Amino acid sequence: MSYRASNHWNGFGDQGPGPSPLDQQGLNVLTIANFQYLQGVALRARQPGAEPCSPDVRCTIDPKKFTYGSHHVVIEVTFSDQVYWLARIRHSPIEDAQSGGPAMDILSEIATMKTLKSHTKIPVPCVFAFSTSSGNEFGFPYTLTEALPGQTLGGSLAKTIPPHFRPKVASQFAEILFQLENLSFDTLGRIYCGQNCDQSLEIIPVDPEARRQPSTSLEWFYNERQQENRLAMAQHVGDKQWISACWILKAAISHIIAEDRVYGPFPLCHLDLHYGNILFDQEYNITGIVDWDQAQIVPLERLAVSPEFITFPGLSPEENQDIIDFRKVVAAHLRELESPIRTYSENDIFLSDILGTKAAEITHRCTYSFPHRALFDARLVSALMYGPGISWEQLVDAYGQMELS
Image 1 (tube, helix red, strand yellow):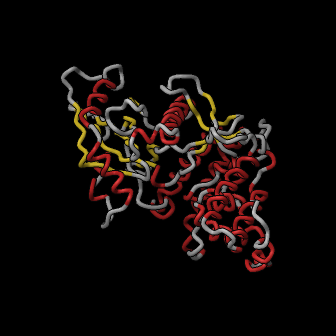
Image 2 (cartoon, rainbow, N blue to C red):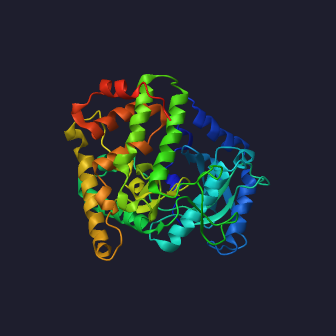
Image 3 (cartoon, rainbow, N blue to C red):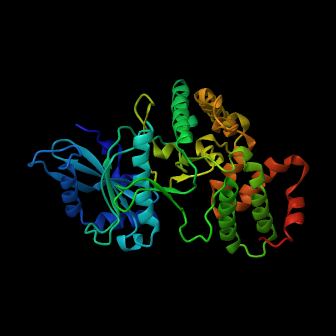
């Protein structure tokens, strides 16, 4: 019998007290999708060798029990021989997926997990079937995947995991980062293995319509910042505070870059590696890393960014201490793993040299955020860059009159 993830789901009980756009999008999947068709897809997918079954095995999908995230509804696929898969369904209708974004997310995620399976020991789910085609009778983009054992935690690792389990979790977290650090490439972008995910690995641009693709870490961070600044200023035209914030976040790039790694190699990065995407068993062993749809090959500095490592400005040093301690233990384990390769590597800078530093916190504030937080982030970043000797008002006087380029 395979693992049954739905034992930890509440379906409609997972929703908040009031309706939200996310809830309505999920309800569209539950009410419109052709689940009978998907049951047939699942049965056919088992026959070629994905946990093969006898001809009399039946498949059922009950949309009343589900869980969901920002972009997907996840529903259990139940076979009568006690095998369980997951159907991960994109909220947007399939015709919307043909614009390139959601469809490419699915294809790149599958190619990424395929690469992780063959080149690392990071636990990721097997994919048995998928579709992004406009001929999809189900009505939505989907993937049918293995149900990895374990469940996510309800909050940050350092705050949720019992103290006596934290060193073990920190060691396993470091091992995952180490494997990603060493799954590196000469080119920035996304992993792709063709429309059927059966071709040789290639690296494709994250934004295929961009006039120029970034080839260095400096270009990558600059492009990311420019895009975020444009979105932020679209809502705050002419506002000196926001102009200053965007200038400061742009100037922060010089505090981020590790000169030794400007030209690579560039590691694969999950981009959202936090408690909501990490599965644990009852003994707090990491049993799975999920949701790789935004994964990219990025500068090494970006791999050091995780919500699990960042402290909260509104909390006291004592309240943040668990996070700081967890981060230090992860960095120490990572440094130990890197030690054998430091002697012969051409690189001087490794991930453990960045993790937990001021530069890593600046990187977090500049990249793991949203345009509407630019003013808040810039205040934090300016304090890290300039210290207490320069006030925010002085920075606004200096930057607020400058045209943002």
